[in-house]
Image (cartoon, rainbow, N blue to C red; front, side, top):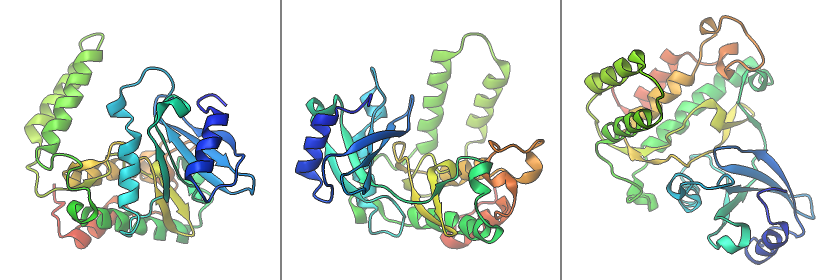
Length: 282
């Protein structure tokens, strides 16, 4: 299995994950330019999940396994649904890079309309409400209370984001693109003042949620998590919360919420405002 040194990783499991019965077999769940996610099935049929950086040369700060492991470990007893963290390996001699192991959560990841189509209308409605309840819980945690007070700078979150996006755009553009320059200018001019700070997931969208029985069974992909403006998470979620009238032609690969039955953006915004007391008028 590319990306897994099966002999050494099996030995590491035997020494560090007492819940696992070696030998384990491995299969790729997802991967590419982002972190690779493997299913590890032990001799008793129990499944675990192993996360590691993508293959080849990568920027370590962008694929920090220790950071992800620390975050899901800290969130374990907060009411924010995350996979159970079993262990972190920082010895690159084992598998060529750092990796961590977490529990395998059963359910359906809402990647697209086909996945959402397995849900009943009642499940879609309750799931949408639970998504916002989870975000409210995340944003009302005091980071210091769970050992994440030093996870990142609390202030100037949007300034840092805009600076990063602009730098990335300048470094990668191949020709003038007036619409992008206009977009960057407007983002700078209309950037709201940050009011408070919270733990920000950074990629809070349906494709990172596991559904089971009308609830969020787990939130995944914490690699962009930091401290900052919580409304950035809200805006990002609402932007990805596609409504049926916004999709001209429905396909199985259409956005999951576009099939209908989920709470509207207005309903989701109301739930968040009521749960946190934050103003979403803009």
